[in-house]
Image 1 (cartoon, rainbow, N blue to C red):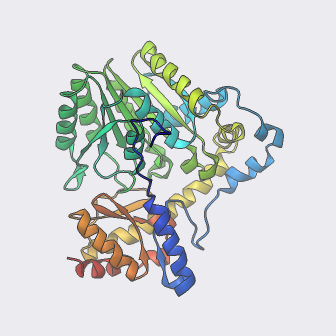
Image 2 (image 1 turned 180 degrees about the horizontal axis):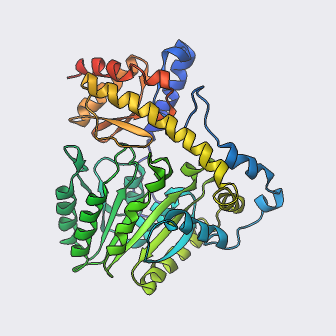
Length: 411
């Protein structure tokens, strides 16, 4: 391919999620909606099958003057009030003693991408969970980076041993570590690390930091759907214990928190012991932001600030109602899965439950068999993702038993 840079992967992208979404849509037309279980959509839907867009978010957004929507933001790093409010929203109610700064990004995706692409040099390796959002791998590929994965689970808990071994292997090959941990409400398994697991992770990263600089990228896209929302940020207090050779970047998504997926607004919150280190990362992120997307939607930032301050009570009440609904759906599915013997990765909270597969060959057979029975799901590495966020309570009832029956035919 002579018209693009030489060191780039030119294999066409295959977005398997949207392919299956289209298949599910066609099946609804052919067989009727009532006969199809569409567990593909990674967005919050109500009980009538309609995409949720919070009134507490979009009513005030619709009142924003068109001139405000049309104008550029106050800075390519984000509106000052927005940057301050993101920090307050994430760490304002915990004992955070770290220096910090915020860069506005296009969704949580922008925060993840800017960290992966700007913290490692070409040819180096970023450390990812073995089961993860597929775009992590794509971002690494486009930045000409290698990836190495740690096994996510040992039994029903985080696999600290694999995490440590993977970091040690990479550290032996390069002079920096960049590690992705998607927590809480992991996509796609719904796992959340315990306080004790986070303590062990930080303790180990500090050991690594005695040899090389360490960047921990904590993707918190689904944090505002944690089932104990009031304490969903408590684990971040463990970050106070990071050493001077560790920086944490938290990737935050307004898209998920505010059900404003299309407005593409998020942020990277940079945390460190030393102001100079935080500022050093911030400078590079600022320049990358200016060179890559230039500006974040002005009205989206202003609306987040308004919703999470002046309209907080209305927003919290509305969101908490859907968190309760999400828990009811997931409780039904996971309880019935346990009763039926359907193997799932350990789930605690969040949008997705993932069926555990022994191999990707088994996964492919199972996925096809499910579609033959008009159950549409999404394939992930070593698993089948079930989006309980978009399934009604009625759709959740009996689904796990059906899926186990189908799985038994694929062994």
